[in-house]
Image (cartoon, rainbow, N blue to C red; front, side, top):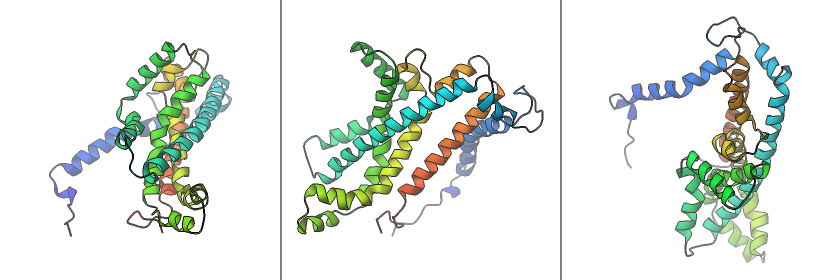
Length: 273
């Protein structure tokens, strides 16, 4: 058995870890703390207050943020459902269809959006829509989000399916079930946690996306991230910090749920139990 390597014993590893954590999370903590600042200034502390959270829901810009949040949630739900359905079919084909020509290429194609910089994807999507004469609007955001979310939904679904041995489906077919019946009655229920995990991950990826949305959205259509960016260009105000904190908390909750649900029914070795 291979010996476990204690990374803490490497010189500078622990210090570098702490530095990376500080650089990653210190700005988020600062935003969260100053969202409770009673002062209108973002540089001076005026005491603890919830006035800016109240401003998000009932202030002068509340209607704009409410409409943008509604657009974000609707687009995220539709994109997550569609991308999860496609990802489930793709995972079934990749992992249950045996060997076929172009399998490696198909796998690379599914995961390509994860490797390509998002700004490149955004520019390419905008050029594609312009080339085919597709007017920017609600539908372009939705299509772009569906395509971008497919690999994020695929990963937990495929990971779940890899942990399910095909003997259950074979046993069902030995009992005269068709391949579709074996999939629907045996494999699909076992995959349910992975599918739900993929849905939650795709939902939050779509909800939080800014770069692609900003490129393909039409005039007069805003999602919550683009509305926050538009408001920040006029000067960062404490209500922007409050709504950013709320969006961050929603993201943390959904990512945590996705992780926990994805681990349901697995033992320490990652196999189904």
